[in-house]
Amino acid sequence: MKLSKLSSNLIGCFLLLNLSALAEETIIKLIPPVINADTIGLKYACMRPKRENGINISAKRIEGNKIVINCYGHGGAGWTTLFGSIQKTIHLFEKEKISKETPIRIIGSGCMGLSMAIELSRSGYHVSGIYTKNLYDAVSWRSAGFFGLLAVGDVQEAIHQAKESFLVYQQISQGKHPYLSRNAVRYLPIYCTKETEEELAFLAQLGLVPPKQLVTLSFEGGATYSGFYQYMTFFMNTGILMQNFLSEIHKKNIPIEIKTVHSFSEVQEQVIVNCTGFGAAELNQDTNLNAVRGHLIALNDLSGPGHLDYMILTSVLQDDHAEPIYMTPKCLVVTPDHPEGIHSLGVIGVTFIPHAEKLSAEQLQELDQNAYQKLLDRASFFFFQKPYKSLKKTG
Image 1 (cartoon, helix red, strand yellow):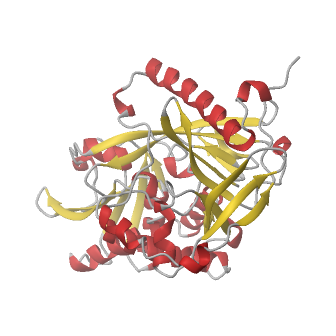
Image 2: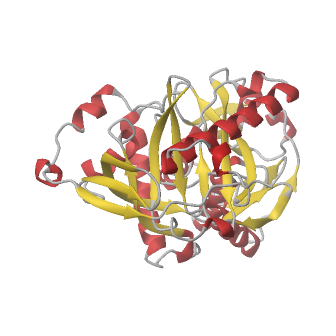
Image 3: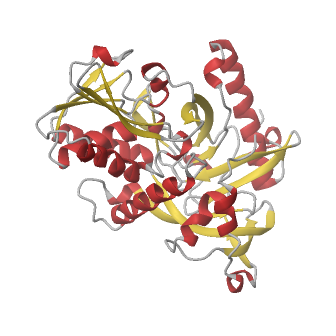
């Protein structure tokens, strides 16, 4: 499946290139990860809550005086727009003139739900608690974590939220954030192609990062590619960030209750913040939501540390389609089966398979098995120009 594109208007802005930066192609020598049967760690999948007509940040009144504040539908751009989305949502509280003494119930425990509870509390609001159906099942734990912007509806609004979020990640990386640890964020080079740069080019256009550089990638013992672009962006170690959020939730004595909410009428509080992601399809009868299946493969310590200081965002021709592949230095993978987290030396991914909510359990299992194999094949082709099966340990 092709990578998501930003709007044509935004792409037009990217044509104003800094030509001097592209005058000479620099050779970048990189150490690739070792990819074989011994270095493959946990394989895991997730369902991104993609909303076809954009993120829903809005307020509505139901059942008389009950107020629902929505913040969901970010798809693969949740971490990129996180802090900007929180700011916009809190402005709705001010617009709706919600008293700071009124109990507020958060539904959802992904990065939006947890950070929403914290920031509302820091703003003086009374957060009575968080409902979640499974604390460690949120897609936020499983994200690969590079700062790039997928298409999310209103492009200019998404860019504004991404800019606000970028500045917060910058604060974290400098050790200046009040509760998020410095080791959760790293400022790193990311290498992409003309076909995949749209997710990053807006950063340079806004002056947040240096102009892109034209480079040739030379992987030690592997492939060489010309015509790549180097951008700088943040890697967000999402497992650590989520653990930071939980720690702050506990410090603020905000209770988390395991409960699946099927209707807002089940919630006692008069003010509800809906951060349920795909769960909003039922709660809001939102037919614009669909589940986009994503797959990632964690690498273990045998993969070596040489690939941990850069990121990859590109595509590989597979079955006559340009299929996405990226790599980030994610070091902690958390799933419901492993809530304590599993150490990793980076992850490779990813897939974007829409409407996965329509599949049966058996169909999902088959889909996942095929997706993992295809992902390993194209990772091996990209780094080594060999199929994965030839890299497996024999005997």
